[in-house]
Image 1 (cartoon, helix red, strand yellow):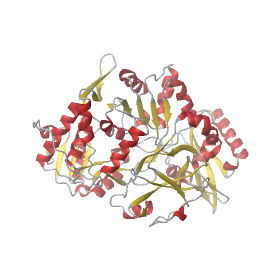
Image 2 (cartoon, helix red, strand yellow):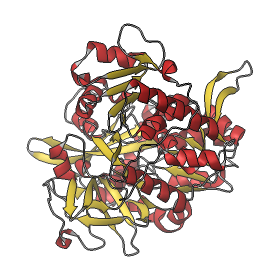
Image 3 (tube, rainbow, N blue to C red):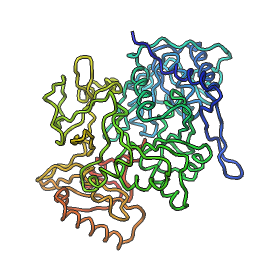
Image 4 (cartoon, rainbow, N blue to C red):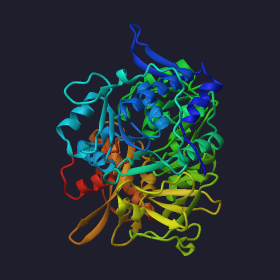
Length: 549
């Protein structure tokens, strides 16, 4: 049988490079304003996770038990997660910024047996007990007050012996993470041990992240893969729940201090850093790779980084919480071969499937598909819904049988995942992303795909981004373009933008159904990336809700 435990890779990294720094974590700033860091080597991180694993085992945490981890980004967050993986327990990772109602529903669905978290998490579990009804053990990261359980520092075992890893199979449940919830309540995604192995293999062998690299993770979840790759993690000094409010000077300082070689983050993060570097005439000389993901990446942003990264390149991997990574394309190919087409409304090219990944385009439908048939596939060049199969593809949503049936297609023992995205495959075998299925706009005369149409208007000076939504009034369906300006704009600038927008509408067949151009001061976005536009919320506003413009 295929046995695998992702936690073994941390111990392997500790054997190969014991004194290489595993984590630098910011712990405040000195009188000179520079960041101060707490540091652990791979040897120390491996030992710390062993100590926690011994302590958790003595406390009664067992293999297979789902364990809610509510710890702020920190060294302990990574050490605790790997300790649970060593035991064979299943960490549950939920974004607390999703809102209390969604968060509590996600907790209830996962039925955690253990809770390891900050005091606020335990206070929540004490006063709102129903979602936490299955809890048997609680561990407080910090000071425990009136709730039951133990404090984390008290469970740090004094045993120096190496913890014996749980004997887990590749098919065993390894972790539960949640989708961003950009089109509804977040769904719990069940990862198996073998899926983690496949992700690590693709990151190492195809994306080129290797031992000795130094990563600044703009998406914190990627920090959990770094120990498995032998990569040093420099945790950024920013609020993980609101990355759009980051201080770019802090991130640039970290890049320069540690010679960061690569980073993963949303286009929102990289727009902020690009503006800071341009205004201060700075370059990212150590950076070899920036992976921009979480939302469509405009070619104009890639062009800016051609100048800011003299020895590096931008990559735009594509995927989802349920299946990542799926495709890859570098910035040079985008600028030389696809950017012009994107800016004319072809969609965003996200490259060819990575080895082992099979992507097909099928007819757009909301109906479940129980079994895969080759007749489902559409020819190259035709727009449809994206379905994917491969070793990184998750098999189910936790306790969501309806959503699982809607998203998963069986083919023997394998699973196709319907991404909920629409696009097409060109004659070169490259995938073009054109938006979310839920965001398609149907008018009385045509069907519009947001990413295609919005690209026409995102190039207008002083426009930060746009959102295409539908309006239904008096039985008629029309399209509305909503614009978010880059800065607070005056009446003359708004008039100029509007006039230019209508010039584009009148001159392009893709946009002829748009009847109105509206302005919104700030777009609602997802918590995780601050980049995925919540078009359904904007559509509600356009159709009469009370979102403030």
